[in-house]
Length: 209
Image 1 (spheres, helix red, strand yellow):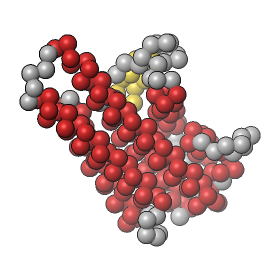
Image 2 (cartoon, rainbow, N blue to C red):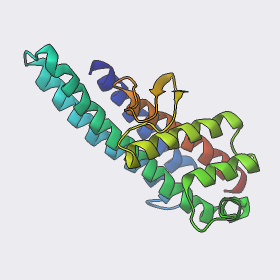
Image 3 (cartoon, one colour):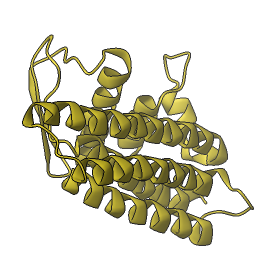
Image 4 (spheres, rainbow, N blue to C red):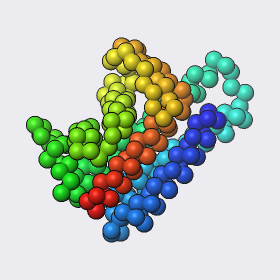
């Protein structure tokens, strides 16, 4: 729990820093959708930190039996997992809006080629194809979005055998079993996704802004 609390502090600092950077360097209007994406993530992280802090302080004052520690850990994982899902949702909405804002980037037509709907994964695949992100970044997006889909649509039950490693995080997956990772898994994933999106936005805006 101490690790999660510290990582939440770091994530809060990151989201505020990125929001302020976009406000000063990229946004061209009040409540610009690009900076609002990061402020939304920051506000969601703040709510999550408040819950994690409440649990941590409460349990530190209690003589918690060892057999209840897994239950306590599961509560922390649940609230941070929900934060991760919301973080990706904010990023996906902003990325979609960016394909309209940066029309000369060819992101929208490349993302929509052969498809009827626009998704974050397709936007990042198009970005890789067009040279806006490198292979390492694209592979990280693939892993992060697979994690998002599994926790959102499959109750965190893996559908493949694989070990994911991103942002210093290691997650083991075996078919039809709950994914296994440390208690700070979704904080690390949220932080990495936020940084990856900032890098993508900075690149695209630097060329077409």
